Image 1: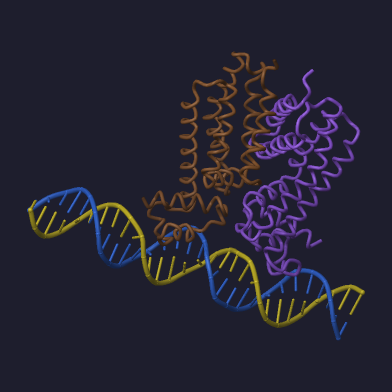
Image 2: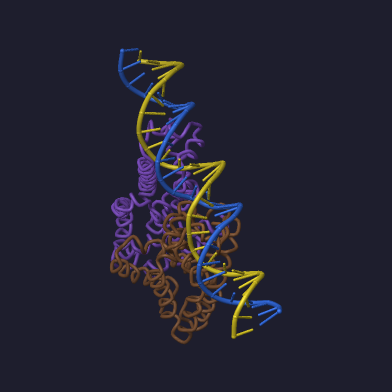
Length: 194
Length: 194
DNA sequence: TGATAATTGCCTGACGATCGTCAGGGAGGG
DNA sequence: CCCTCCCTGACGATCGTCAGGCAATTATCA
């Protein structure tokens, strides 16, 4: 209902203009209420920002869990590639949540700076377990060259973040071409040479 | 002098709070003047933003040119690795310019959105020529596996941007460890297998 | 069941603070 | 005398927040 509508509009405004740039008046206008009415659900602007962040994290985590169950029984190479692609598609379909995440993480408002580190660690922790098990399975199966799982994780995250950074620079078809090239080189870098 | 001081303070404030979040009063305070005095050098807030962007781009381009002349005659593998590392060090030493770049590119103010595409294309064009020649030299020398130079460029940019995105998440020594891992996997992905 | 009390959801009004910008002044050096 | 550089003053607009009101819904009790 109204609270969710406010959260959605807040995400959008924060993502676009940052914490200080977004105004309660603008958020309220998007919802169709007055700015003072927001206080019924979120006492302070900071509360609204925090609630929006948790909503975004929850949404992404649900996506990750769906990913996990969906790709349980397919070959490691394809699974890893599909996770990269599905992350890309998720970000394409959820540009607002994606932009809000990038904004919150890279340009956090002062009051949020202290808890940012743990929030990131929490989100990374949730995904790292999933990814790590895939890498270990790949190394056991001899598909991935033997190495530290942490090294693979570092490179995989760098890959995902690089994609997240670049995907809005180019047209969709142009970037999907790039994505194929990028994945090919990453996989060549971690696979067991025949 | 004063104009440069204003530019520096503007970069810092824009990088921290975004275009709408940064205030002329705050910038002026950092310089030690009144906000109205900024108008002597930059009539509008938008002009200040544009000037700061060009200053940032100029500074980075100078860095790239230094990189180019410095690493002219060393092996391709080391040259590519050093460029990755020097980019990282540059961003460590210039956190303000780096943050301003990320802010301007990912959360551009409305008036800047139209010209952003060409600005990015311009900056990428400047570096792409340099990088492409290195990849082609590597393939000619048989150090890099034969493939499209564009593919290599895409992956290399993804690598650089992924690093730029992640470098502030971790402590310096922790990230430099990660950096080594990431580079190792990237190089394994593009090199000519023995 | 019907009357009443309490709670919810959004409203209007107003507050001090700050925003970017316009107008104009005055000191100092060429 | 003019030009550069920074100043003060003031403007309308917008910011986030506090105080209080009013209808509709829900809960409580005779």
